[in-house]
Length: 153
Image (cartoon, rainbow, N blue to C red; front, side, top):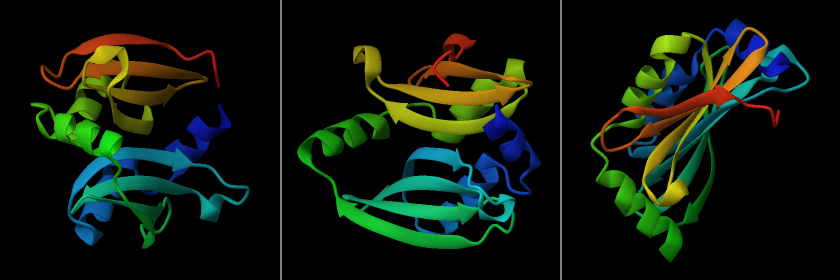
């Protein structure tokens, strides 16, 4: 639960970090998440963006908004297939985050596109109070498919 507190105290939200990352690397964000460090000033967001069949990791400082390009790797066949499916989604990752957080109104900790359950979905992790919720959003309709307290963390 410390992660939820740290993320909620950050000057930069996950959504703002995604915008900053996309200004540095134009492309499609496939995953974005808060990463808590030992020192508050080192807390950051790790964001993966696909551009030109490469996956670029971008680090955004959660307090200053400073953007650092990190490692880049070529997509393999499986990643390319998943990415092509994501491009067909009618709901964007930022819209899925809004939909997921409408009822909870918490702090978004992580968001990613996934092909779990045999269909294209977004998995959104939201911290509220001392709970972390896993919310699944249909990437085609934007509807929240499920929302429950995560007992794994």
